[in-house]
Image (cartoon, rainbow, N blue to C red; front, side, top):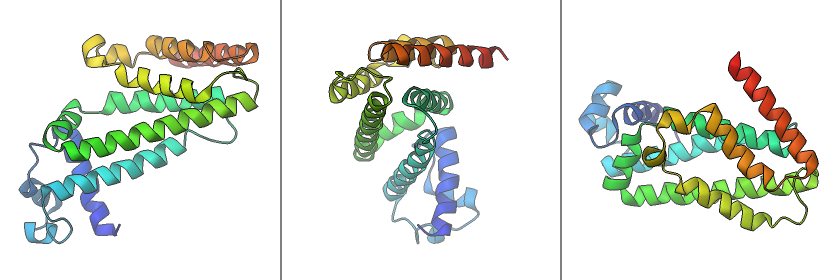
Length: 208
């Protein structure tokens, strides 16, 4: 991806996250960038193409951000905390209109990002479960593929706009409950001790 296109997609990302996708026209994008539509069309063929490139860019950005959660110095439970904190941050910052517009007006792009998101999350959790077993933090007899699917299924089935407000869903209280619910079901005694220490640290830092 060349630098000029990256610049365009950076501004498009800001616009879509703030106003949603449907309301932002190609004229809006060109005006915000201070370029002509003719110049804009040198990089994308139409709005659908622009949305597609926006999605590809989002996938790349998310991949880099999530990789930062998986550091060799962290054990599996610490890793899971980092990933969950990151996902919480995404939910708080996300404009629901962007995903709604994507799902309604660009379903082919929406299905693409859902598929990638689902596959990557499954693989991240699977690797985390395998790592936890090797570290003695998770039960050795645990079926990691089944648990990874259950984790993914539970994550996708929680609609915080129906059952929780965004504030409730991303609250420290619910955050701790969800992680405890997951980890306690798969952890060894050693893992539970690590979990309880992480929760104490999180509560202390949150109070500060």
